[in-house]
Image (tube, rainbow, N blue to C red; front, side, top):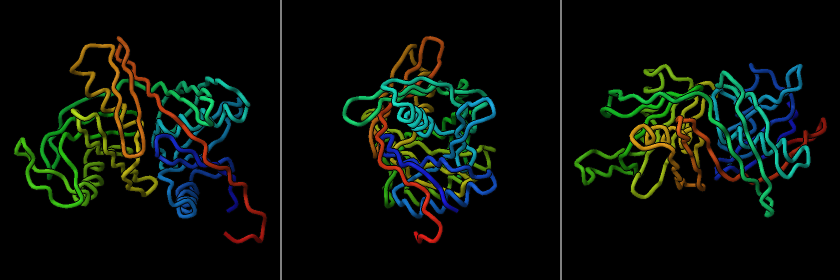
Length: 277
């Protein structure tokens, strides 16, 4: 299949946005092919318009993604040649449109915000193989907040006497916990609260992907909801992640807005018939 697409970089969470119409049934396979072509990409979203002309974004697994929503807002701004742009965007995994903004920064990048859908529910759940953890349920995805270290190899015990997670163990547990929680997609958010750092692992069964993401917008929002539950509102939380920085703000009513920076990387037009990849 020939596909026109662009590649964007929201805090290192490299995102492909496909402009060519692709049926929902074909999207997982199309996304897998594009991620092979663009090995740095961590996710794929498909852009379309409904009969009323509203912009829609569907992720390959039908999940919700805040970073991709920011990218779609930037795409719209670039398409319209607007320095600043605000729009309502229909995103998979969200029951109502979300408001996105994009503003040119002068260095080729854009600042972006997303008003995250719904009000996340935070609960403590006993998860097999690990213990009791906060689980933040959101529209289109849930997140487990883990305030323990993650390492390449067995890290033994930390200063609190708790066992650390290896990456391999986390990868084994993510699909199991996703099924147990009945989530559309699941993130394991390894949080270092003192240092303000977040290491995200995201499992999307609908797309067949399990990825240590360079940043996770919904995961950042989940951490914000978790911290806001025990804090005075309004509050702001900024988290450094492997690929960059994301900020989540909770207003006095607990409404969550995510903010970050998006860089445009490239556009790839569909290849003419007979041209090999």
